[in-house]
Length: 573
Image (tube, rainbow, N blue to C red; front, side):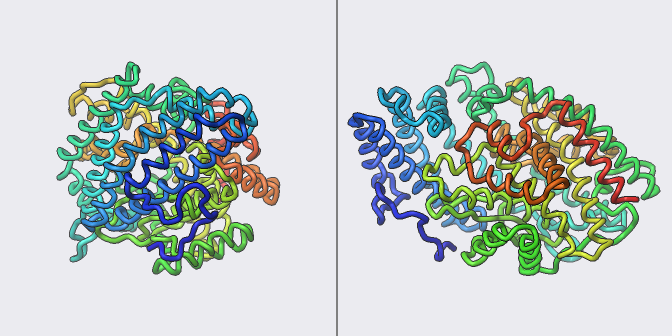
């Protein structure tokens, strides 16, 4: 799969032929690094040791990424599965232990004050955080959670139903929710929901196992609950759990009313008594589903044409990914659900994974993941591996802004009327996602602030949040499906408390889009300059370089809701 990939920069510290999937080969290099930290007699030697450490870190990260990609591309491949699990069980735990020792050596080093302060501010801060939170007893627990997460992915990726005489994955079933025939939509939705419900007990048990281990990790680290531990471990230096709760309130006050307006319009246009779960994706005017492309090659060609118009440098980056076979976009049975961009840390190149089935959301997903890919490519010249990754809150600005900026060129996929429909679909999707983000994040707050809860209590908590943020969807007759709707949100299983970032970033992306309406050229220049910083600056500084504000209070949510309301009104009139 990666035959065309080469190192971006020749190795200086790590041997060129080192087997990075074998701990016995890696361990001596960590020992050498500890010796180098001890022997460093000035800041220059200390800095060189950091560069050596980061080179080793990148080599291990690339090995892990390649194994993860192979596993998710074909979850039924036993060899790929075992190869990935070997890395999770044998390499990651040892790397965490040794990286902690190196972080501790750096944090207490007598010459760390001699390092360039601005250059190493974030690196030293993050090393200190690792020292603060690391507990050796948590390493096996993290390995166990990674394995449980892989089991969840394998289960969800295997689910399929019979529809129209053919076996279809649950992802493929999503296209039928866009059809005009309401009875057919309902049948498709119920088949999908019921298939997931058949696995509900197993999925609930997986979550229980994950929560048990995560609660233990937080207790081991001296925290009263996993929520506060997770926030700290995610390096949220610039906002708190209470800020997230205030964000939920702002979404309830500003976005949920807009969502209810849209559901009201949909109910009237469809001539129905209430909006059911299978009514939210269909065109309310009864038009057939948008069909942006026939196959993945067409999806790639049209997306390339968008970038050709948007920005020459971005276009060249996307073309480079094609040349190096760094795209796996088609849905198939046995492929893990969802979409992601992963970075090959030594090649300093991105890989995009998704499950395209021929719907408008696929176009948005590819633009989104391309934004992440551009982030990887913009920061290629950064020598520190750690700095080639920004905080998630800004990573998602890169991707979500690209959805909005690229969305201006959907004429590559559609005629004029279909462009209008596609843009309405996209902007309404942004309105829909804010309440969903609040629901998922608030649910995780509840999960980990109420350890020892029962499945029934968990269902009740989820139902209460759906009532608060759901915008008036009628779930009557499908109460059990509503109670288990969170089962489809893989972040809850794989990346706890990694979801509110999407909402924070979406506000940032909307600000980028608003800026582009005033000066597109300058906005793109600011965007690329901010991406090139990677994670080398604190989060507020990254937002500032992009000419936007890191703020998710009602003061910022309200004008973005107004912007969406106005843009949708203009498109519909």
